Length: 150
Image (cartoon, rainbow, N blue to C red):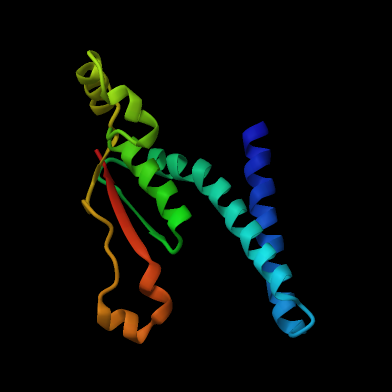
């Protein structure tokens, strides 16, 4: 119940920040650059906190053979998606680096592989080509990652 309240509060926070940013755009020049950047930073942090919880839930909700595709537009978002997908696919992440050395590394890798619930459909993220970036400059930072439930 406590986790559900946290998620609900985060969704409300993101909705509140969206409304604030829309009203700030309507006001125009009375919003300073610092206020705007603070608002965007808060919005990004709130979304990332929500994504850390939501991605494992989304992966576990997939039916066998179901696919989950996530587009990230920021390196922080992409890192969260990459780690969640690596964990679901039974691959080591940066947090597991210290366990990849020493006499128990093969047992650790076997354990990770046994916990895998998905496989990566795209080995590397799909990024826009030069033509798409020319048509839509905001797409240049986007990355698409896809996994499939086993």
